[in-house]
Image 1 (cartoon, chains in turn red, purple):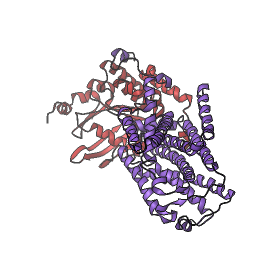
Image 2 (image 1 turned 180 degrees about the vertical axis):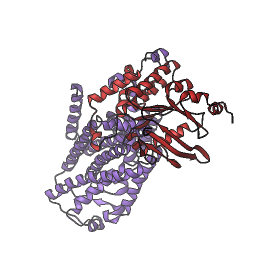
Image 3 (image 1 turned 90 degrees about the horizontal axis):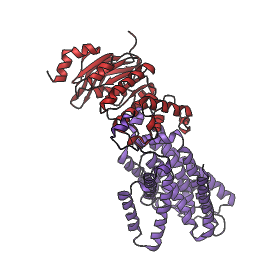
Image 4 (image 1 turned 120 degrees about the vertical axis):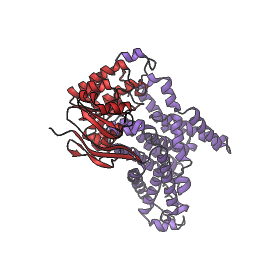
Length: 248
Length: 350
């Protein structure tokens, strides 16, 4: 087995008395599309926040490409190539789409003096290509805050791609998107994985989407890892079905 | 630069050069107007472009003023005994002494505030929103109180500045042009700066700092530079203003949090924050109104100014430039979605 790109070992995170994640361990293989499912409040977003460095974990460790990142901050982790999107879409609402993408260009090697440079034309072209990829080319000069929610979601996805991540953590990429657009989005996620070689780790509530998308799925329930395996196995797992239907 | 824009810039420069010649009695007022423009421009870098509302930027103005004064005097005389005499000692500076002292003083008045801004930014940029505003206000008030308690720089009784060598009117004209050059330089610098990646980064911090961090942006770096740029120009402005006034003291002249400190915010809001020209227009309008009320509405001047600020903040939050951008977005190269929000057809085009 190759070295996992993300390896979470025994991570526990509590908010006061609420234990959001209890001894969670999982691995994301490079180049894969891995899913994370679970009923509401099962600790999926908390786990994402822990991985992305949004808050410190109480115990356990998180490795990215074999490197310990448990104690790194959000910015450092992002610069390593581990980028996340938000469940509540977050873009820069007062800037136009092109500028939203430009600012998302990688900051990995940026030095002090780089802040006083202008963006080269190649960067504009790249931004336009990615906007075309997500289907927002026509809207590239519009102020991002005026786009519809679904379009903002696509924009956020394009921004994440602009950042050239190795791994993308997607928190419910299809939530709130027009059902007719979901198929297009699934297609684009698969293409991003295949063509740009980006490993995807996806939280998703829509079972049809995640079963179609992921090769391997983890299921959380009440902060604990309940089951894992390929989609077919998860679909038939009695404990997963019970968790979703509220059995104890 | 288009021909029309070039003509506008040249016209403003020409007006600036002619103003003290046509109205020699108002030279100081015009000089203060340039400083007001500089105040608004530098405040907007933080408050408008980056979304960090500092109420303490006046700190760098006062700091620059004191650094310059200490340099000008300390270069040729013992500062402690000069301030201890409370003006009894008169130093006769020769012309070269005066101008060398002034040049060095202005230089240090620019550098020291930058260093202080960089240090303060480590502490204060952990704060956001109203906490940052109050934190910076606290820093400015603390600076004023510390200066007032520090006898080496004259404490509360201040410092009498070196006397400008030259005939009547020459001092005013000299500092008027110094202020004008400083502000024009500040404008040109910001104009250049707002076209680099820096501008996009501080706009991103304004729109959503957490998101900017999640993309790996070196947010601290940008915030520190933004504040240092403000501090640099405010320090120079302080040095010039102190020399123009002739006498400096901490509470009313160097760190006037309640007048200049608030004016910088009010002027920027009036003109429209987050734009290059908004602060300039706001400063000119606000200062003109202020000078008129001080002349014709004496006794009511603070009430008139307060009313202006309240009306601005309650009914006209976008400011003049913001209003123009809403009304005439095409003037600014901004496009808005022609399709109404939620239009399925518009979304279906993807």
